Length: 441
Image (cartoon, rainbow, N blue to C red; front, side, top):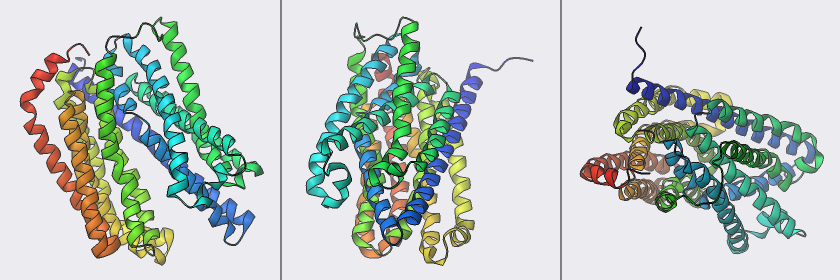
């Protein structure tokens, strides 16, 4: 029996990596939903009346704040680690350490900036759990979790490039399981900051531990040192900066669209947000598959087209099945799970899930141009995604409410996929020139 050829092995790595990544994501998503359910039940049972939901509301605001600061201060470093990590060159271990230092500084600046701006942007009661009588301790705790969460993202990206899939899943399983015994501590479960610690303390700690383990591994090989700084730091930093702008654009809808809907339709916002929570999980399937394509194709850029098609087959196939299932079963499933009060959720869900199919095209083509270091194409694709989803939403929500948001989300993703395809064809001529200019990185 002949052994598999290099193309077949590369395809299998994309499939294998995507499956491992989706398993990890599924465990993390299930753990997040379980945490929310347990927290809601515990706070309602202990506090009673409106006190439980009010406490959850404040805790969820802090959750949103921490996720936002982490998103806004990532500086494109996870994408850079995923892009250059698989090259097998010794300098990547040194640059990984510099990435940890860089994200520490950006997290500090981002946290302080958020605390300053929050006083002007949000009601005082939202931030009071952190900035009350012991605001310095609150700032330190919040900063610790932001940095740890940033480390965790970088550690996961590095493990993916090393194909340590078992480590990726093991970290997620441990983080999910450690949370629940923490509910036994009254000081944590009875206040908003404590609930934030339960949710983000374990993943932050895993980030610090993972960074230390990777540093020890690199140092034992004689590679994990800050000095001398590798000469490749300039193109890597340029790549990270360009993709930081791209990530801000591509992830903006995740944060902005719910705000648009809440501004126009407060009475229907609950139904929308329930659907949106599920949609974000569905949309992560193409995202994590594209990260695998980015890591695997970066090992050999000549295979990028084959890897992109394989990733599209995986992500497109999964999202197509989910879309068909949503059209067939969403109404029934929502009614059984949440009751008749959320009928609107079942009505808008199919269109919003179907938008994941064109998003799979956008995500794979975005991974392709990142592998090829096509900075202009990266900005065009991500910028088009942000504009074409948010601008129609702002218009259509004002006219049709939540139904308009669902329509805008589907149509915007279709248009963004068309732009991604057009951009890919338009940049074919420049691929060879860029490849020769960046052959050493």
